[in-house]
Amino acid sequence: MGGSSTTSSSRCARSGPASPTTAPRSGRVPRRRGGPPILVGGFAPAALRRVARHGDGFVCAAPLAWAGPLVHALGEQWAAAGRGGRPRLVCQVNVAVGGPDTLTRARRAIADYYAFAGRPGWGEPLHDPGEIVDTVAAYADFGADELVLYCYADDPAQVDTLAALVR
Image (cartoon, rainbow, N blue to C red; front, top):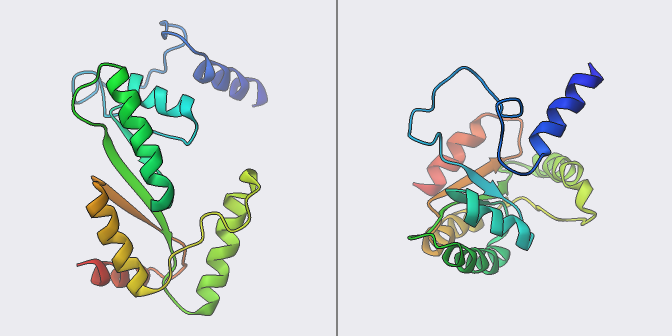
């Protein structure tokens, strides 16, 4: 069990062109020439360079205040790589709609998820309906092609609530 996992991880982490022995194979043929669109996320300059060189777009899982500088830097990298147009921009924000217990559980889940970053409070979920509506509008104005509302609640009705808010 451990050996095959290590081997697979090593192959995926390897830089450089894939060879027949290292390229992942699923037996499927991509539906579009060159395969599915590749979206890359990250915050470091090296990650943005990888998006510009190899990706079709950027997954920006950052608050809007951080997104502006990231997307601006990516635009510079995109142009430096000789790419035309602009990368697809998919943004994500954490949300938790519900009572105080929902928000407490959401904060705990997000803190656990982002513990690796060592930044308490990172990823604080939006929970006020007005703030969610304003944030969706701000990302649209910002130029996001898509906005993922990453739901942190155990009640499936949250999806209906969010849909009603943003329509």
